[in-house]
Image (spheres, rainbow, N blue to C red):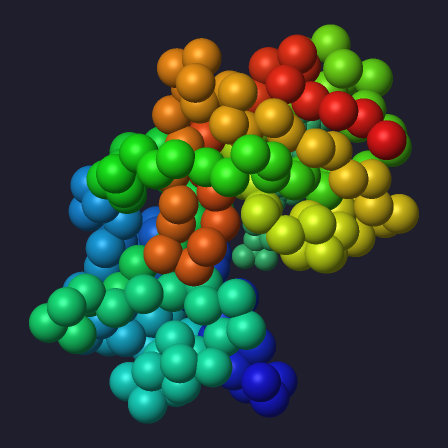
Length: 181
Ligand code: HQG
């Protein structure tokens, strides 16, 4: 992705996950925004974005962070939200036996005590792929990969959801399901 598209992707993440109010909008209950209104409101506030750019970001984004509605008129982020009113309405899914979470050493004492908490986001984010978890941890420094006994956790009644772009979501991971390296 070129610089302009990366900027647009970051702007869409801000609006569609965290602060739609920066362009004077609210996400609907499932996190969707009307694309025409998004573009109009963004442009009015000096964030230059065109329909073509938006479609290019959706199509080329390496993590497929954004999804269009079936009619193509609305857009939402597939995961990562902090807007507390958003419910993606994903059906519960059976997770694989193990999932992974990338973090950094400074958080480990607290994670040992409290388990994985969702912090500012609506869910804890987990990956089926260790390498992806490593990249997630790397955003903050030297990555530490935690292993989650997801199948056991699910059998004990904790729901898991699979986002449209392959990220596993759950409310929290109690420490008893975590293995530390
Ligand atoms: C840590 C990105 C102390 C947790 C990624 C993490 C992901 C605790 C941080 C998605 C804790 C929260 C989410 C506890 C958890 N004590 N620290 N009890 N429980 N933490 O950004 O998983 O690229 O909200 O380890 O790829 O890092 O933006 O979550 O370090 O999929 O599309 O608290 O965001 O997606 O950080 O990342 P975050 P995350 P995008």
